Every structure is written in structure tokens, then in C-alpha cells.
Image (cartoon, rainbow, N blue to C red):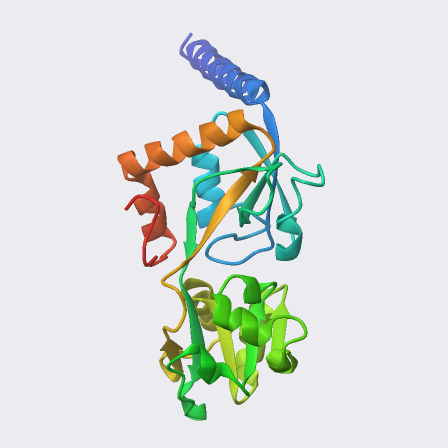
Length: 259
């Protein structure tokens, strides 16, 4: 009888777990599906094929009522992903289209000009970048102020010294390999890839010559989902979950949407 009792008990536990799993699956199936465009991996913001990271987790929490399917695209394609009908949401974009519904600024990059101490470069203002090799992300010339844009926009004389990288790990790798080069990049991304590639951060100089921060929004196909996203961000600020994610991913933002 004791053996039968054990078998019966195990059967009950098995059935409970099975029903619990089926219930969770059913609840997940009931959630509306959203196709979400997000950048290629840029740790600590997007990591492991968009399975985790600061941006990924913020969006998941803010849109927890939806089943999200992340689609990674190069940075330059994010800006038009919603307009072209490829996705419902694009994460990490600038407001530039009246047909797209934009969120509040929800993610902030702290961009610096970074040089190697061994090169002995004096960089105190944007004009000091002139005649140096400058390494940036795609379309950075549009996001770092009017003076930077005038120097490095297509057709400008200094453009010959300017290189954009779709892959920021490659951007960091080339910076450490080249002499007399200056990388323009978010500090947290730079730190992550430099450590991964085995470089000593104490050998770099961080030049704070750009606006305090570069903010990015999410672009939405519909107002209803936009409103839910903004509401979710407010809830994350009130609960402290936004601050917890910054701490979890070791992102030291100069200012956040909760301030």
C-alpha cells in the first residue's frame, strides 16, 4: 500500500505540473503578438541575440501584456522598420516621422570621445577631433550635435577621417589596434567590449565633449501599444524596477527617464 500511495502521490504531482504548464502556455498564447525590431547585440543593452540585456528587459517589463518576438537588424534599419511595415515596434530610434507614434525617451547613452593614453591626444572640444581618425556607429554624425555634424556629415572635408561601424565590437577592436584613433561610443558599451577583448580600461582617456546624453525612443505602429509602453515605463520607475535593471547591467546613465 505504501508503494501504491507513493505512485499515486507522484501521479498527482505530475498532473499538477502538467496542468500548470498547460495553463501558462495557454496564457502566453492569449497574449497579443508583437514583432519588435531591435539592434544587433550591443552589450550591455542587447545581449545573446536579444535574449537579454537592458533594452530587452525594459521592453519586456513595460509590455508584459504582449508576447514579444525580437527581430535584430542593423542600427541603420531600425529607423525605418515600422514605416516599411516590417514590425509593430522599433526599439532605439529617433523621432522623425509623423506616421509613427513615438514613446518618451526611455534609454540613454552616455557618449564619449575616447583616446588611448599612449597616443597623448589633447581632446577638449569637438573641434579637436579634426584631423584624427574618428570611429563611430552608423549615422552618429546626426546625433552628436550640430558642430560634429558639420565636421563629419557626407561631403564635409573631415569625412575622410570618419568611419562608421554596424558592429560595435569591431569598432572597439579597431580602436585598440590603431594608433592616433578616437572612438565615439557609449561608455558602457566600450567598457564591456574592451574587457571582453582583454584590454585595460586604465589605458584609455574619456573626453566628455558631447551633450550630456543621447536619448532614444521606441517607435510604434499604433497609439494603443505606445500608450501601454509609456504607462509601463511609469510603473517601472515607481516600483524601482528601472533602477534595478540599470544596476543589474552596470549601466551608469548620466540621467534617466525616472528623474
